[in-house]
Every structure is written in C-alpha cells, then in structure tokens.
Image 1 (cartoon, rainbow, N blue to C red):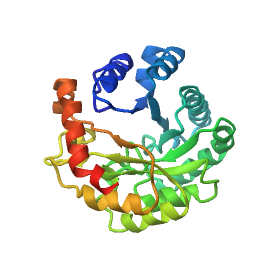
Image 2 (cartoon, one colour):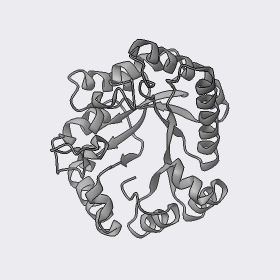
Image 3 (cartoon, one colour):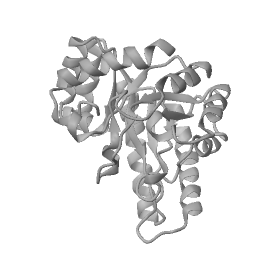
Image 4 (cartoon, one colour):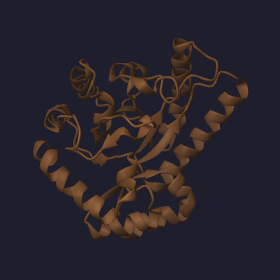
Length: 268
C-alpha cells in the first residue's frame, strides 16, 4: 500500500531492485494481476507474501449481508493460501447504516471469526485481527484496542487467530504495551506494521499515516516492546498518504528503507 499506484508486477520489480524481501499484498492488486499469475510472479522472484489484506467487515446484521461476508472471507482465505501468505489481515467492519448497537456488532464479529476459523485452519492461514484507531470505530472497525482483539482471539488456537500490532492504531492506547506483552505470551502476534501518525489529520482520516520519523510515534519504544514479546517475523511498512502516493515510488521506497534502518531495525 505504500506504493499504492504500482501494479503488483511493478511492486515486485521495485522490491527486487531495492532489496525488499517480502510484500504485504492487497487483494485488489492481486485481483488485477490474477491470482495464479500473482502467485507465480512472487515465487519466480523469490519474494515472500508477508500477509494478504484484507478480510473481515463482519458486522452486517441481515442474513444476506452475513452470507456475503462469509463467502468473501472464504475466498480471501483461499487467496492467501494460494499466495503462500501466512496471515490474512482482518478489519472487523464498522456499524451498519442506522445501527448504534456497538456491542451487538462486536458479537457478530466474534460469531464470524468462530465460523471461519476452522476453514482458515484447514488451509494453513491465520486470521490476523487488526484493531484500528477509535476514530474508525463507526465506519471501519468496531475493534479499537489490542485488548479487544486478544479477547476475541482467546477462544481459538494461536496458530489460527492472531493479532496485528500497527503503530498507527495502537500508539495512543495506555494499555497497548501490556497487551503486546500478553500477545507475545499467547503467541498471537501475526504482524508488526509501522508508519507514523501525522498532523493535521486530513479530511480523509485514513490518509493520516506518514513516513516513519515525520510524525509523533516513538518507534524505538514499540519495536522494543514487540521484540521483547518474542516477535521475529516480517515488519510491514503500510502508509496511506496522498503526498507519498504521488511521489516517485523509487524515492519513496529508498526513503522508507533509510527510515526503517534508522528508526526500527536497531531495536529488532
């Protein structure tokens, strides 16, 4: 997503050029390329798919909406398996139009996870629950904290349901460091994602993410916490930012590598 305007093939070429060993894939880019072609391209290039984004949006209350969400997430699990992506990132979904029952929406998320976990387990894919910053609770994710994500995961095998630690979404939460430690003890950290929290927040709040070092997040603190929790997997840089998307992708990824090596890598 950091190089949002590139096709999957172009992203692969850039990763090879700048020695990036893995890509966090998004389903729209895979669909554009074709699932079989995308899988073959990654394999031939010797690159890993660190994760596939995204599944989820589980909060529909009507039978048709529920059935559609389950069917789409089964497809997403199959796609992740075909790509060799060990993690399917799950964004819970917001409140349906006119719905103010936040607790009910969260229960529907729990129900859908319970329904899909056996399907994911059979295909060797882990459902990676990503809590989102609470400013997204109404439209994107009724799960806002790592504690909520871990409680949802608790009834399932850690190899099947984990959680995502995304600095943008958790840095504000005074309980998050304790929850990172809990996630480590429970062997549930699926992914560590880094980007900064920039001000002012743009009209489209989704695009408030920034390059590491340009905003307000202490990456040493969070990287130390994730490392202390035992995480040794890929670190994904996921930046939604209109200015970054408009820049030369080679320049962006070169800067990304430099900031990563300065602000994140020393603490891994």
